[in-house]
Image (cartoon, rainbow, N blue to C red):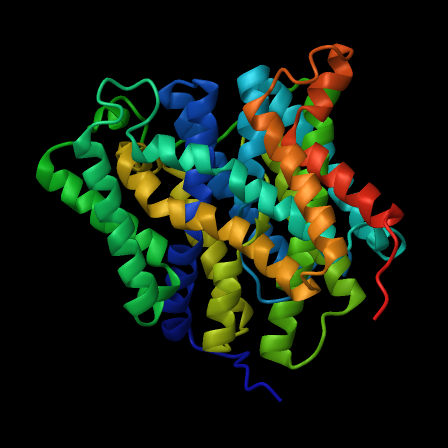
Length: 426
């Protein structure tokens, strides 16, 4: 049996809670920073989006811990943050449409995610490992441009592409890799955050940090419903719904890993269904208040596995800390002072790890001729539309907008190929 600790003192729980917050907070700030930047939001709007991201993630952590009537929430020791897998689709939507369409798509996507949880047993055959691997690889590859733009200084900035920006980005990247591969304990678990902090300190010394974002921000501020509006378009809803389904499948893996590592057993169907619904409750709230979709934080699953602490006090405190940070705009605004090269240098490892996760999933399923054909064709077509966004310009606009999304195209082709190509014999 795993020697999990389900009863620790407050004195023990508090540092463990801060450790969880340190590990998950990068996602909660990076996703809204990238998406709000792509949408061209004002600094005050960007801060609101960061606030909503933190508050909704904090609520989702509580939901997972409470497990409302055994239906909403997994009742497993998990931490929830913003999902990196959604970034490429979210930026694609805000680049084509008003940001209000993003939150409309997120609202429907969250409902689709809940429905998927209830129907998972019946439709999971559609999401074979090769399909999931192909989509995850496409999501990761589609984020490379974002990472490179940030490392170069942020597209549109006067010093974009300067040697100084690249020097700062590579310094941050190298430090992050050092923490990740040679660090110990929380330094290694939260290497992205500590790499970002180190790059930020160097930026302060170099005098390249601007604190303009803090000017005029209130000390305390509640997020309000529909600040960014909400509209609906099929061209935004379909790709977002696909990513919600893929994210749900990934969440299942995180819940399984948690149950095995701390309880020496598989996660129950009730835990899996409740967990997916719990994360999507947070995502649904995000569509109302302006926060990005939620996903189970994998790095925190690693922390739970390492510490073996499952006491609910740790997760209640983690939730409280995250929500408190989200309620104070001055604290949220500090994240907007991070120079783009530092943000890019610290997070490029996260973005690259997504596609490598897909590669690992494919390898574990077997690099057979059939799998290589499915993954190769679907990824090639999906990534191809990133380079040729007008490739389907001769189609009706409503259809073109949907199939021109790399995630939708990859998922659709992978599912079809997996169903029609003959199975290989031993």
